[in-house]
Length: 475
Figure (cartoon, rainbow, N blue to C red):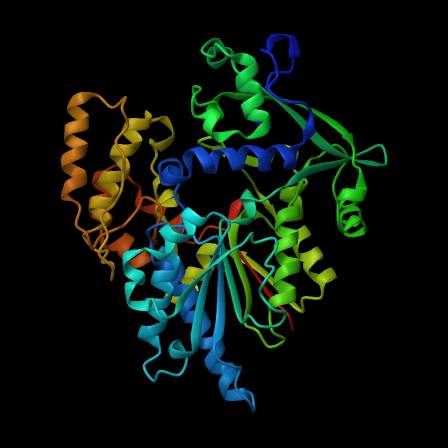
């Protein structure tokens, strides 16, 4: 589990819970995370749809092309309204950019006027915040909200949805870690402890443990924040299949994996697939899911692969796209494809693209810089790219400056941040095209980037764990 795991339980303070399957503790901790830190989620991590527009535009262009093709080849049109679900609505930026671009593409008014765009979210506050995105103001007649879990879309009738989209959702849903051991399938069980520093700060230990176990959020707010300081013990136990669906599909998949190699089994994502199959119409465009994961058996069979990430106390697991495909086939999906996300975006633009993090990774000194020095490199890189990059949306880049940044550098970075234009790169997680990169190569080289390294990255194959677009259609 997390990197601060201790193997010696005697070195740990008193546990704050018992051993449970990793997916159960993941759901427990993530519920606490969103309750305590949900309003600050952008402080801990950004997604490719938090502020950037290019993923949303690629989705809109793809949808427009598919619906136009369907409308011209079918004798009867798909019924109106055309319902689109976005599962996990984020901050509303994906919806706003998707609808704006779809309206711009639909010059003849054949598709956009028929669209009904439904934001689906399990937390009321998040749902209202997403709908309040300022760029959704022009689309309010098209946008509805639906309070529900993505895993249980009760209230949406069978066969009534044309398009489903979700961005970096599946990795947050309950996920088991399973392996084969001497012919048996086992899964990871974990037990949470609090590290010694945080443990020493809590006077009412029994009250804290009770609040954590019961998810008593009001009580937890009275204690020092625990999420970053949880230390996990782990062990492996035989899987109790009565609570795990798709046993045959999972066990057949695990036969391809070496013994004692952990692989993610994304149960929450399986549930989303099942609901998607139910609500999608027979001629639907389908479901697109964007998330980090692996679609290569060799990668999944690697015992050293990363299975999870931790962001501000929230746990995200990589998506096992090969097992997702097997479950989708079991459910009756006719079309299943997986591709790197940047290929999907680049194909829409007709050029190679890199995400800003991928570009930053080519810098020869990136890995050796202090965190605040990395921040400086990010902002200097954004300033250089803004010479050629222009967004169709007005955005102010949000980039908190670290407290540990030296005072003189804080002032310099503050001036640099305030000088970045609103029509430039909107975020440190955004896509830039080959032309935009090469057009400002002189400025990038002045920052220490190497031209050949950047050119190689633009055409490099997918990484071992990659952000991918997985697509599922009923037929």
